[in-house]
Image (tube, rainbow, N blue to C red; front, top):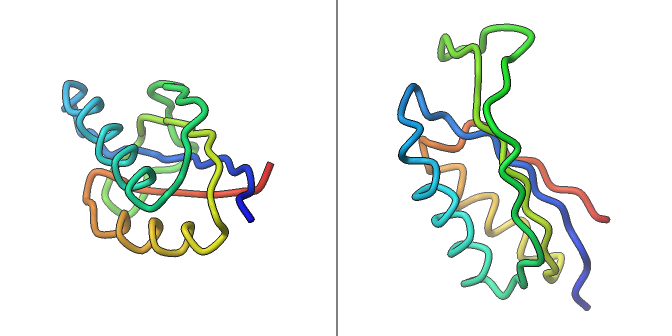
Length: 95
């Protein structure tokens, strides 16, 4: 049974703002190829972190996806997107 989810991604662009759309496209393809139905994509934008992270980054580009998918899809998508260096953080929650 499909459920509604919200996925928040923090992208590591290191001054490569032109690569944002490519990374958003990669996330979109990964979700759709696993059977998710996208409802909305919100490009929240660049936000400063409260503390510098381990990669000496002090900001990231936030993107929020609203989608519908089987619960098993989340684990597979999360595992594959962990391999993408442009995605610093990903978090999913049911809506």
